[in-house]
Image (cartoon, rainbow, N blue to C red; front, side, top):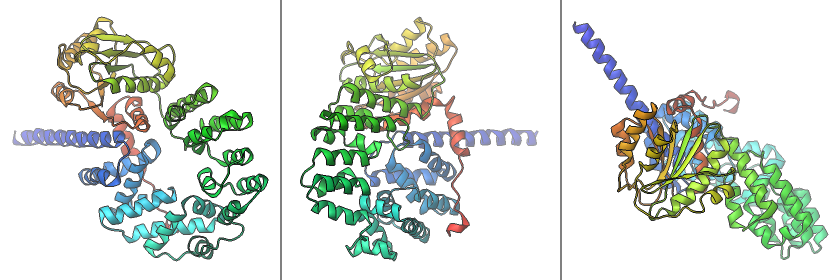
Length: 495
């Protein structure tokens, strides 16, 4: 009898321990999937806490995030915190991940490690030394890095007292770049008098747009054409407003070149999904260019996953919820692109209003929500109640709200009724805007409902972080996928 009781107690402890681990991992994952761009020192406590609470999950999350995540600040911090951890396998993984970064990101890893974490171990110096020497051995790669990030490279050499090779010394410290280097070409570009000579220098050495602009007194159409030709698809997107101001959209040849770059952006893995859509508004673009930017966003979103569960998108339209309505259009366009099952959309105050877009573009969603205005009181259960009446069965809910419900039907009651009537227990992704409360989280905890919280703070680039939450059959499977993601291993030959 005593052995049986002990066995049962042991099982209960194991179950409680597993549940606690799962809760911690859900909290960590929520934080990393939803935190937008901020200062590094503000994000550091999140990384330190996650590494301390569950180092195994944190390490695999770091490796997984480099493929699936979209916030570069987190990638920098993952490397810094892994590299300065007590676990050799984590330091080895960070060593390998650092080799993939741009010079400015490596510089940020170093600065964060020294200034915020408070240490720069030998493994970090070893990784950066290898990073710099590998680039020195590839003249084209080093020259390209020096052209775009000369100050960052100097900072890495000087801060860690790494001796530069002859070419690096000449380019970075002696101010005497070899004649075959882009830095020497940049000096010639500043002195070139004819547009033809300038264009040839830009084309031959692939001088970046922002670098060339600073060196030239006048930008002729011929020079601007060569600059566009030398730009990556992401650089074109980033500089569309400036290109428009310089007349690129009024010249048929240059416009055609821009359109070709945007076509390439659809399949370029380095292009951010939502920078294209933001560029439309920033540059006030319309017509074919705007349509191509929408196609870029569509292609990049589709690359990130598919939604295979029937889904509800519920948008708070009560008083002061203008931001929720705007965000609802963006998320609606994103979700509809990758949703392979039913997608039911409602705006709500104390009543629910069906929203039916005729297509999958942002313009389609703007048209569908033309009559939706922020007014009225708030009932977060209104849409669920309406879905019961329509017999609409879903397995996950995206709710955009401040969660300050003040009228019946309350979310808790409506959700319980939905579960009873539809025989399904949907997971909830709560996208919180404005001065949000924790009422919905408290209701979900009481109901035993899985809730994932996305605190939106105006960063549309971070919206693609929702896709991993929506595209997995369950949160548990997503956590399992992360834990199974292999850590990069440092090769002996790199020692």
